[in-house]
Amino acid sequence: MKQACEGHGVELLGINTPPGDTAKGDFGLGVLPGRQADFEKSFLQAADYARQSGASSVHVMAGVVEPAAKPEATEIFARNLAFAAGAAPDLTLLLEPINQRDKPGYFYSTIAEAAALIERVGAPNIRIMFDVYHVGVSEGDILKRLERHLPMIGHVQIAAVPSRAEPDEGEIAYGAVFAALDGLSYAGWVGCEYRPRAGTDEGLRWLKTLQVSL
Image 1 (cartoon, helix red, strand yellow):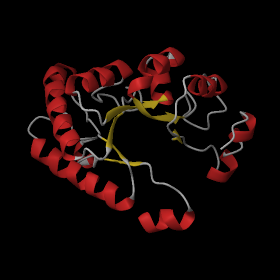
Image 2: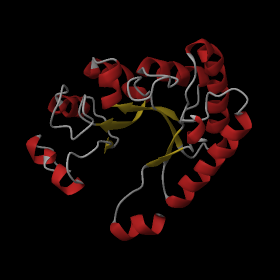
Image 3: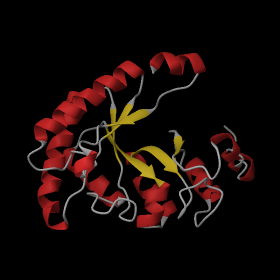
Image 4: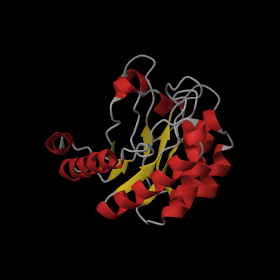
């Protein structure tokens, strides 16, 4: 992967921690009771892969829990995040709330929950992955949430709401989002995590539609 990136002049930004056994419903191990050893092993694997491939960040996947188990899951996730932050101080660990429509039962779906975890663990290398699509589906009020949580944001992702296609359709005025990021002096990357309506190259016409320069 590192050689491929170098050969094409691109940078690998980040990877996910292993989701676990997806056939059994796993979608991350960070919050699951009795799986701490599995989490630690999978995180160390992800961190090692990130370093060798050239990635600078790891999205720590939380997992799916029943609502009644959320208090215990919060305690477990905080401990696991503290372990991960200490084990990989050279990497940025990203927390991404995922909306309940796309992944019912996922541990968290709001930016405030991610921010509370970051404050609780207190590790400088844990940041928010601000996925505008998920925020739009779960909460709305995107510009104010960007402004409020900017100091904790380590990465931004975009897609149209509700389709998750290119960002030139749907409910979100991405021109305003990009202007807000510029106005807030956001210096990080904006990842295009959308499902193209046709193909990747065809879909990149949105850059001209929204007058975005790379």
